Length: 204
Image 1 (tube, rainbow, N blue to C red):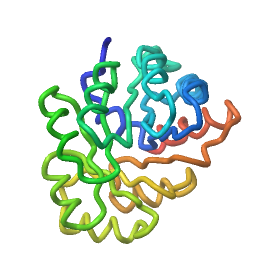
Image 2 (cartoon, one colour):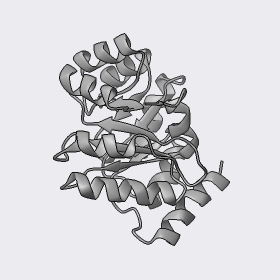
Image 3 (cartoon, rainbow, N blue to C red):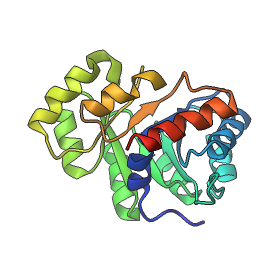
Image 4 (tube, one colour):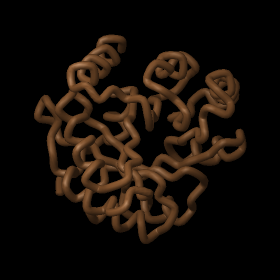
C-alpha cells in the first residue's frame, strides 16, 4: 500500500490533525471518509477504537477531495505489536500518548514517522531530540506552557493534543505548535467542516 513520502509534512501543512476516538470501526470509517471529502488529508485513528485495524485497512488507501493519497496515522500506540500491525496495514505515521521505547524501536526499524507522547520538559526534550513530539494532555498546561517549553527547545516540533477544540487551534499555533490534534468538537456538517479546513489553509 502506498504511504506518502512526508507524513509529518502533510500534518504540518494541514495544521489541525483530527483524532478519531470512536466506539466502532464503522464510525471511524464514516468519519474519516467525511473528513477526506471535506478537504482534510491527514487523520489519526486510535487503537482504543474496537476494530481499529479494520478501520485502518478500509481508509488507508483512500484519497482526499483533491485526489491526494490520504495520510492515515494510528494513535494510542504503546506496544511493538500494535506498531507493527499498524504499519503492516498502511499507517503513514504512529503516535503514542506517552514515552514508548518499543514503538520507537519498531518505527526506526521500519523507517516510519513516530510522534512520541510527552508532558514534562524532560520528556518533551527527549522526544523532540528523536523527532516530532506530542504534548499530552495539552489542556493541562495550556498554550502558555507550550510557549515556555518552546523557549528552551526552539527547534522542536511539538503537536499538542488533548482537550483542545477547533476554535482554540489558532492560539496553540501562535504559541509554537507545529500542528494541533483535535479529538472532539469538529463540525458534523459537511459544508462547515470543509470551511474549517479551507480557513486553516488560507491562514498559512
